[in-house]
Image 1 (spheres, rainbow, N blue to C red):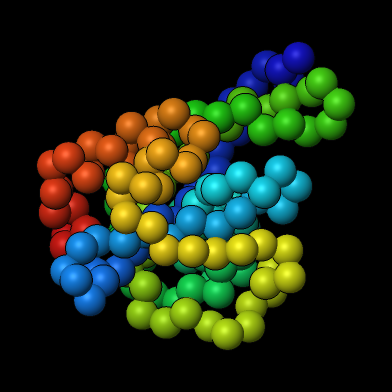
Image 2 (cartoon, rainbow, N blue to C red):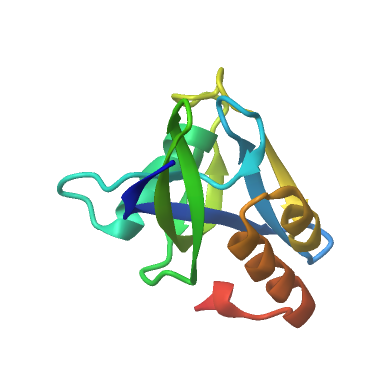
Length: 147
């Protein structure tokens, strides 16, 4: 059962160029189901959407970097609230060029983090819109990260 309205969240797509020259993205596990996701969260008062995305990447994955000012994609998913109740969410995704990975961060005991190729990440995430976006990047070798 859905609550009827669509809520918004902001996410970071953490990336880096690996030593082999390939683009890698970091995924983290969700706290409850342990599925692979990207850091995301609800709007925060006094922070703009890219700042929210960067904060989520810090809190959930211990990442510090340069966040893009424009969302590169958006996807929809259903967030389970309790029992059989769900919230419909749209997630706006901002690229985050990772400059530092911290050894300790707020949610380190609750999540795992790992770097993946674009194609690997696309196969691991369950949100269809995000998977399609990652597959498209892998196929195109698109340069939006350089913007």
